Image (cartoon, rainbow, N blue to C red; front, side, top):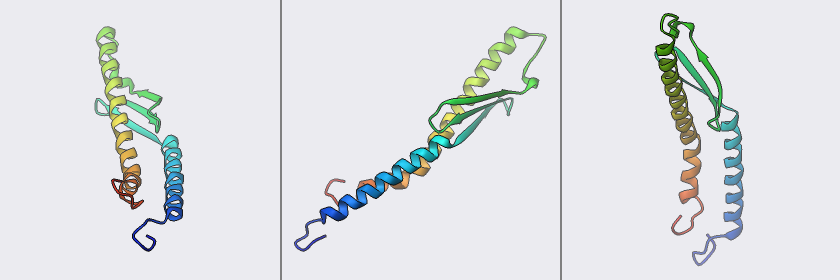
Length: 115
């Protein structure tokens, strides 16, 4: 702060610029990250990228019952959804873990009232 208790605007702008650069860098890093989720004890694995897009589904042949294709299809559909949801939750956890410190900096790091 400058004399008289006023924040130094130039320092605040520089800090905001650094935080923006960190945010963009983290977004890129997360977008390039692949996160896996599983269901059915590993019978189905879903891989998502950091933008929550499904990039790969792997189904273990042991999940397929050739004697009951209708039941197998229904079970596999449920397992695929569960694996995607699991991977999505992992992606959210990773994003929160990576972005959390930056968000805390935005909340109090600029020295602005109410921030």
